[in-house]
Length: 335
Image (cartoon, rainbow, N blue to C red; front, side, top):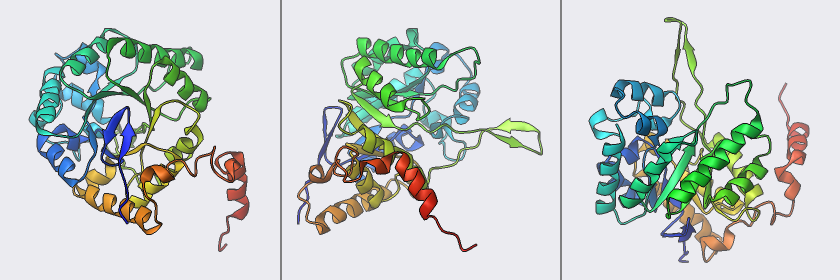
C-alpha cells in the first residue's frame, strides 16, 4: 500500500517528516546536497551565534572555543575545517545563498542567542538572503542568583517578539525543557509570535580534565533514550498550542520517527544519528518509517499523527505523574 508521507511544517509543504537539524553536516554545501539526496525534506543550517553578529571581529579560535562548549554544531570531533564551516555573518549568508541555489527543499536558517538586542535585526538580512524560515535556538544558562525565573522568561518572550517584528518568514523557537511551567511557557512563546516549537535544545555539560585540572567541553551525542523527553512533551502539547511541533533529540531510527508522529509531531529533526552514520542513514530511517505505516494499512502519516497524544490517548494520565508511580511500582530487578 502506498502511504502519503507528506507533511506541513511552519506552513511549508514537505515531502516527508525528516528534517536534518543544525550540525556540521548542514554547514557544508556538499553534505547539504547529500542530505537532500538521501531524503531530507528540509535542512536547518548551523546556528549563527549572537556573539558572532555583535563581535564578528573576534578571532575564529575564540568563537570555536565558545561554541564547542555548548553546541554539537561546533564539536571538535566532528567539525569540518574552519574554512568550510560557519565562521561569521558573511560566510553564513554565503552558505545560505549557495544552499538556496543548489537545493530544492526548504532551507531554514538558525540564530543562537539569549538576550534581546540589536543583533536580532540580522534576521532581516537572513530573510532577504532567501531563508524559507528561521529557527531561534535559545541557549541560556541562568547563573545570576539575583535573576528570577520570571525575568528570564520575560527575556525569552521579548526576544521572540523582537524577531517576529523583524521578519515575515515563519519563526520556530528551539527551547530547553528547563522551565518551571513548560506548558505555559510554550503557550506564551506562541502568543508572542512563534510559528513553531522545536523540542528540545540539549544543554551540553562541561567536564573536568583531572590531568590538566581544567574545565573542558565534552559533547555526548544523543541516544534513543533521549527520545523520551520530546516524546512526552510533544504528546502533551499536541492540540493545546496553535503551532507546528518539531521533535528533536534521540531520533535515530524509523521507529523513533513513528513514535513522535503518533505523539503529535509535525516533523522530526536529526543530527546525532547523521553525524554517526552519515547522510545516507536518512534513507534507511525513511524506509523504516514508511514500512511501519504501510504494514498497518495507514493511508497517510496524517492519519496517525497525534493519535497517541495526551488529548487523544485512552490513558492521558500516562504522560503525567501516574506514569512515574507506575514505573517505580512495576520495575523489577533480579536482585
